[in-house]
Image 1 (spheres, rainbow, N blue to C red):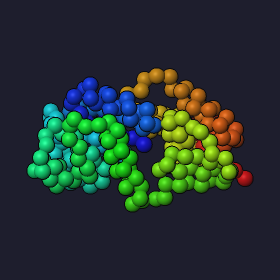
Image 2: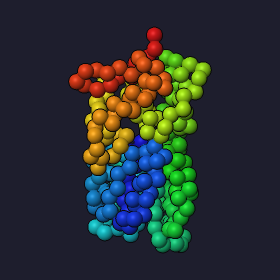
Image 3: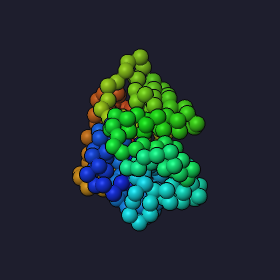
Image 4: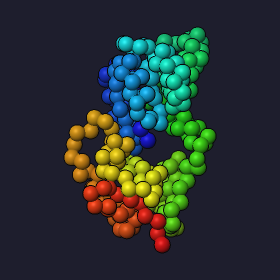
Length: 221
């Protein structure tokens, strides 16, 4: 899942990004309200963490603009302010939740997961079954037949992206974009490393390489 952090306190933003990346999310970070609005409008994010006090456009205006444009992405607002009026204003502009600084990182992660669960509950089932493979994207658990597979956060994210597009050919660039982040400039062959790990932990013929095009999740016969 892709998250966008719009926060002008760079140390806080990078700290949050590092922690959420370790949780298995792909995280993009911007430090300006106008850039945040442009990014959230142009890219398909699963959740936006949005500070209120931002240069360019404040968080209220960013949130209101996204809702006016029809974007229903969950928005978690952050602010150093405290008071019922500020909370009401944030929620009135269309935010889904509100967290006052300073906050516990554990609480933020819990709020993020709750918002993502709520969105999934309103949509498709989080459990995907393909042959003998079962993937629960809410609980982040995987079974092959009766056996549960232990995957790292990044391995799960790669598998999740393939599962959500099962039967389609998914390019290496697409996996990089959705599982890592827009700023990733490392070796693109990192995708092959994780696909190989999934084949070892699950089944060698589960993920087929389509030469020159990408990978396709196969359903067991």
